[in-house]
Length: 193
Image (cartoon, rainbow, N blue to C red):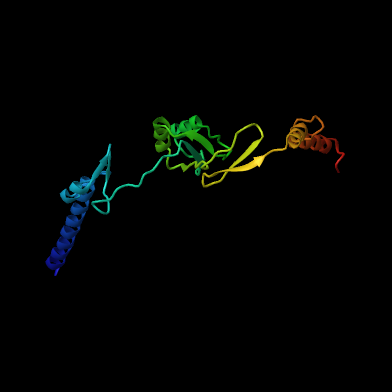
């Protein structure tokens, strides 16, 4: 009885060791990022510098495409929690930590290399210019959609523009910081109770 139980336990132990050995072999032979293409795939591959592209059909031709000269870049992930080199790249591109405004950049190889390093933190939208650009002067107003389309809204009225600038730069205008400071001082004096 004792011998039979011991042999059963040894068999179970041996099978567990074999399973562990096969798992260990898998873990030891697994190399991240290693790709072996089958030889049949290599014949169909089209190379663009370091990139291999496998077209669906052999006679596939890419449509003519003119790349945008300007890119609109949105930050979709926060600064916090990223390594310092990603934060430096975001700062070089013009992103600020606490503001999420889009940044416009030229479509050059240097900028694209920087964007590739932080591709997990951003969204890139090519800017599409209209067919016929109107005459540009100081009063022409433009709008850029989230899709990257530039729309010409029209011309600003010079009198209205001047009135807006006068109000923005007026000394009588109460700003949020000034209002909050005055209210805080009144609270401390007991005038707001």
